Image 1 (cartoon, rainbow, N blue to C red):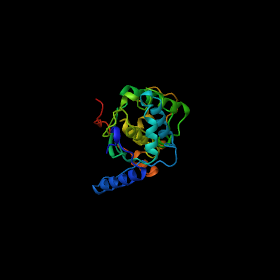
Image 2: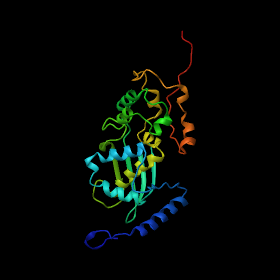
Image 3: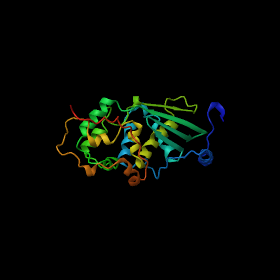
Image 4: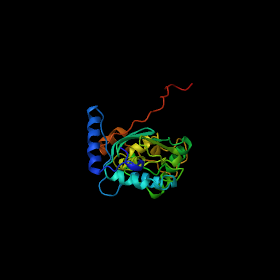
Length: 251
């Protein structure tokens, strides 16, 4: 509904909450597993992966004007559903109405990923250590490096929202971008799925590239991905494996 002068009327938070609850119930009836973003207190992200995602967003001047409103929205529970897929995030945000937000994130370019793996080779002992963010300062610095690290640049992020806001990034999109950081606190593996890379490659190294340390991780430290779901209480994304080579004797 539009007020005088063409601006939308203010919708009280209590009304927006009831509106969000009705939408969540509607989605649940359709068999959709609703996944709201819940932020306790004012700190949106508390772990290495969540904080690094949010800090990466804030380094880009393209996003600076709209991000503060997004922080307010994500803190007050306006992101009522957020789903992360390989290369894409879909979310529903409660504002004057329920708005649909879609964020597309480009895959890490192959050469960049190979270089990251090479630079980190031999410095990460296990996937558990990686997902817990228990990394050396050198590895954390390499992964978070602007433009050549794991986190996307502003140009690698595209977004859209069903709201009528004329701005390229509305507050609903900003809330979802922060919501991704909050989600990485609980499911850090989603970052690798979102960027379409396999975290195991950071432990295994990049092919035959020279290692920065002489000692390779022992087999006992290479924890299988299917064991991580139970450990972290999250679903670990499956990554496609290459074709198996046919065994045969050398002639």
